[in-house]
Image (cartoon, rainbow, N blue to C red; front, side, top):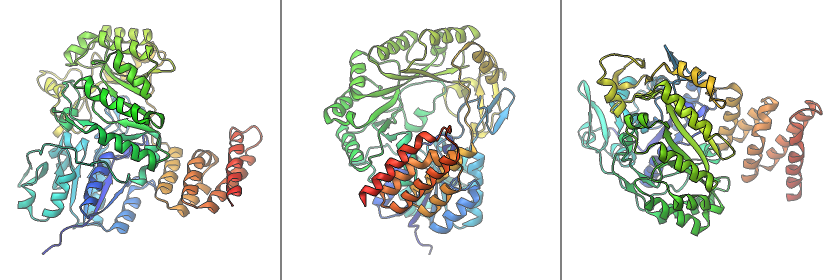
Length: 548
């Protein structure tokens, strides 16, 4: 009889990490839960440190020799239809599409470890689970929260009869896939993660560490998948448990200064829950250690909340979509232009850092509504505390209101891309013109338009590769990568490398990279932009000397 799997490998399959470094929060929750149940769990990323994912993945598989492999899918694509360097394009749009990269990973695993079961999960997977399993050619997946489902799968495998009874599971059944009933989610007592995954230390030190306060979303925004992923009912986490986790992070991780609360929208269903938490943050003094941020709706949002957010040092990411009431109404938002303007005024009054998120091209959009939104953007123009981020075109995902709206249309007008099974391939609704045409129109009018220069840049990749090796404490390879880098990469990664080396007592290596960098900078000449870094390096060297 086949033995039950005990060694688990969880792969973070989001290649966009090479552009925007977001730590795999969901995978870490699953890993922590399984470790508490005596499983040996490793999280890894197959797109670093080498440019060839097959080389990375073969090394990971040989090193770990797992009994089970989990695939964490964070994104199907970027949702953005005007990606300058996108890898997937059609008439009127260009974007990044990630599932072919995941399929490549699956094919490599099947070739290298043909007998090892694979199970997929994550937010992106939950949107279209059956279609993704079919595309990837694997049998098992978890819809929604995965901690307990994966544990039960490990206990049940390879008994398909037992697997078929596990809540949240989707599995191949004859020629199709069967999805089991979802189990209501509950935050575990002392559910905080004991130890964050160190391989992504750079991500949560720079982009911020995610903390979950509640699950669920009761909104009906046309394009949004959050109610599908998290459900429409709210599940609240105990405030004191959140505070305890924040205090533990402050004590254990000196490099983490930014916290992002991952709630779909921090200020729904009302202001009571979030206001109590903010008051407890202030009372505990955690606002003096961290900078906080989260996503907010323009309503509810009042003076009292604004004052609390300012006291606690919050940054506000404001979901607005449009300033045109006609567009907001058609797309089922719970707020209107007056709410947006009132909230922007409150942010200005209380000195709140605010990022305004908009979407051009949703159903009901016309050149008149676009001009109106731009007029308001210019009226509430960017400054030191306010900025705008926007996308163009609504990405059509399975089972969203936008998907149902499109399915009812008698013609394909305003549709860009291809309708595929499960709506996996990038597919957009955009009116009155294509995403790229609208972008050109907006670029001509808006003085602070967005260029979407997201790219797998070679220099950035090398920088990330070194940091990834540093986070794995693979000092020899990190040092080799550092010495083989150009001056730009060395200067960029130096401070992080030095800090980690000294944290772990690798003093001689810290000295060597410092001295080598000074030599390299001096060779660039007295007018070099890197010369200003020399005093800092010499100061670090003096600290090493005094410590001896």
